[in-house]
Image (cartoon, rainbow, N blue to C red; front, side, top):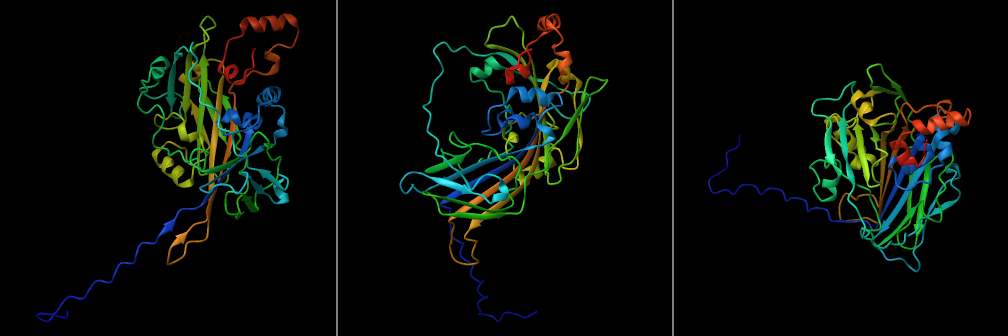
Length: 404
């Protein structure tokens, strides 16, 4: 080993490279791509998605009873453009598609009108009732379940800890509140979802308040998620599904209710909530599009089921607490594609013009144990009257507005 001579100075360390200066993008674009099956085919609003048309209740009933829809899934798109720039003239932007998308040449991204903020009505009454939270796959609920939440206390501001998950980041991207200029689709002027078609290929977004955005997708709509729900002898409900090839993980939830007919309109009774998470989770950002990195972490934590899993059971105690009908949903989270222009240079500042993110998921909804039409009357007036006498208010009716 070489010896340093007395009086010699040590060699100077090489200088650290200067940190690269990164300028945030002028425009951000989000394209959320969904596949709907089951009751979710009838309307995105029932599945917690953003937007979506009004549900055709007759079609929903036929779908829930095994008919209608021709077994074909529907496609679901949500487009959002946010910019730090002010528009040149009137705010205007369009997303241009290839013919294979079956969306026409383009769809308009409309700037929504800001609705006035309304306070509570003067005769507002605090809701009365309880929320019973269950979780975990299995024939029976685990120890410590259900956790019971009093709605009246929540209305008074006494929100219990961990009612909504804080471990799942909510990242919806551009919005009217975080952008100087903003446009979205579907909107009040245009909202027809694609009937078939493909999103593979080039996409172009052009408008008066952002640079032109162009990217090419290699990923298409995810395959439909099909779930078979079968009541078991022990009172649980078995769920079985086929793997969705590009799924990164699965999350299921079910909701039911018991509402007494003699209670007031502001008394919701008991609302029952169950999720497939192995620990207590109550929706939140789990209802949204999630990136693969977030899903990977949630799979490790047991919040989301791994992509290899193909079965789960809703515990018997959930079915017993919820009564005759429950409304259930399962989400298959999917891949994500990210684009940025210009690409990152090796040296010098990186002045981004725009970024774009495309997220995918597949979602299905169903009503476990829903009776067929022959059990709901339709075989004469007397049978119909008997059905009315036996009719009980249910969570399915509360959600869809369909009575007995």
